[in-house]
Length: 311
Ligand code: HEM
Image 1 (cartoon, protein in one colour):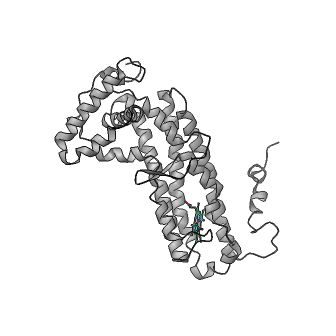
Image 2 (cartoon, rainbow, N blue to C red):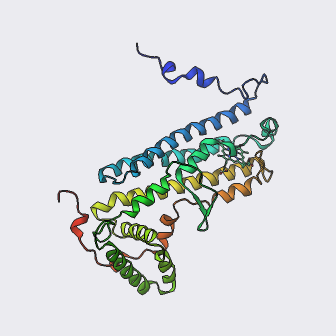
Image 3 (tube, rainbow, N blue to C red):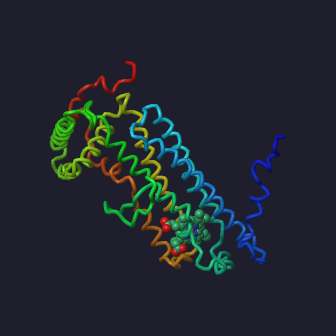
């Protein structure tokens, strides 16, 4: 028998969860109901976001990522990005809570705080280790691979001038490419060439990964590189949308509690503003400062390698 709308979506159960604490006999106010509903809405979106990000992570986790699976990875990411954009708007609904009215029930929260949102923490660890000003912060305790790690492994294998890590003269090819790139960079931007040199002055693994990244960014119109480039832009857009989400949360908080400390014991707005400095995909951000214009790029070798399959 076909289920009803309510049976399928379990609406009765869903709508019975806005009472405050389980055993609380207190009747909650209209404002508190609003407060609970907005939070629960976010947590539902977090669930969606975590699930979609896991799908992308799993696609990229394979040792060989089929070119045809990249559009699917991008598809999951697009859903996450749209959800984050929506969540940034959702703070506006929270802001209809008047600062003075929040005080009517703020004490009921005790030390409960968004700090304790385990889904938010799961989401963060799924994204990967956080960095501020190029330095890693916090410990990564998760045993599962993060999106950051699988992206690094995937970038590591980028064909550079048609050469892959298992090619016999890969090292030489990669080094020649980097050398040519740095020369071209120096001609255009002698004042900032050190920055570009530092980008590649790394152990061979990181050096190859970064060369792969710059290769995709530079020759992005080649058919074989266009989906990889699209994936990279969605990773950046995801991170950008999270930063905007964090900063609009901070503005909403500033508007409602001013400079009060948070229920979770942090400094409040100052702490939240600091979290907008977090970056996960640091290389994807920093590569932007050392790109060079197309006409100055080292000549492409093995262009046929980057054509469409079957061409
Ligand atoms: C009146 C509404 C709100 C106020 C005044 C507020 C305030 C704060 C403050 C001050 C913090 C810093 C931690 C602390 O000391 O407690 C925080 C953290 C957080 N809040 Fe809110 N918040 C509000 C609504 C929400 C909503 C609706 C969500 C959605 C789930 C949310 C999610 C979070 C998360 C995830 C954190 C942790 C951020 C991090 O550590 O990176 N907040 N909030």
